[in-house]
Image 1 (cartoon, rainbow, N blue to C red):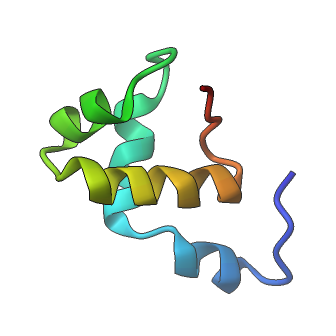
Image 2: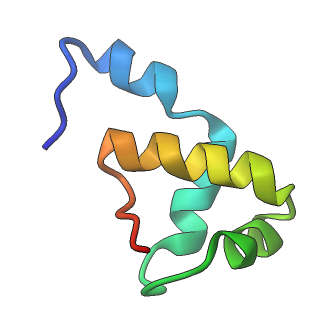
Length: 64
């Protein structure tokens, strides 16, 4: 469930790079962060940080 007072608060946290991660993961089942980073051509650490943020936004679900 999204819990933002305004759309601006939500979209303020959804950067273009984060949107690329969502698109790369869409319909792919479980993916490791390393694989997502490869697919979007970015550093694993930065993709990990973005995955955490996207999970907080409710756009990705993290598993262990």
